[in-house]
Amino acid sequence: MFMALEPRRLYRQVAEQIRALIDCGELPAGERLPAERELAERFGVSRPTVREALIVLEVEGRVQIRMGSGVYISGNTHPAIPVLPDDDSEGPFEILQARCIVEGAIAEEAARCATPEGIAKLDAMLRQMEEGLDVPARALASDRGFHTAITDIIGNGALNRFTGFIYDSRMSPYFEKLASHFESVGSWGHALAEHRAIRDAIAAKDPAAAREAMRRHLTLSQKRFSESFGEEPARED
Image 1: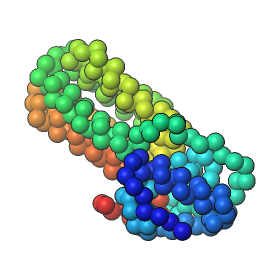
Image 2: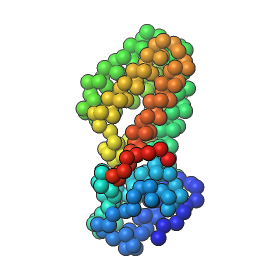
Image 3: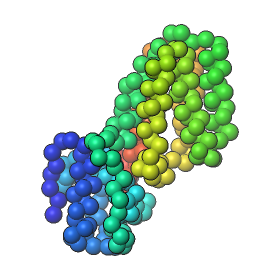
Image 4: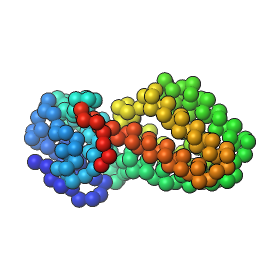
């Protein structure tokens, strides 16, 4: 019933194939999908790829993700509107990987030219984030503000626009649904601690430490979004 897929945006292909199986009745309403690891093996893809596909289908209303229980076919009989654009857009994990590479270099450069004014702006963003950990919209805005404030230290408008643009890729129903499963006061607290490590490295004018702190932060962010939807604990692929 499942076929191995060729490389492209694999999560889109996984979503398309499961969607077709639902539409033709091979996956009836109420049925539990196989475990995440089993789906990954059948499609020949990674578990994060399967998670991305399942989020697409949940936003469309075709499946229900029950954390700690599994993923079930929805009883929604109305045709769903696909949530993905027609172009071959990147998924959340690809975006986070890109941020890790680019923003690591930005943090490194910011450490070379840090000013008291730039550090004060980072501190202000950290205070805002700490005060808004329990309000997702405030935490998100402060998170964005912190990352763009690092770019402001360099004083390059193009980099600033790029940082804001790539961050704003998460402002979609798809990414919001993913975040609703995995973001919490606790996860934002971890992010805040990681931000402080980045700030301290930049303030110390230590480029290597700043780059590593940013890399660690965005790698851990990706890991937080990679928890399993099923009963089994998440493991590295």
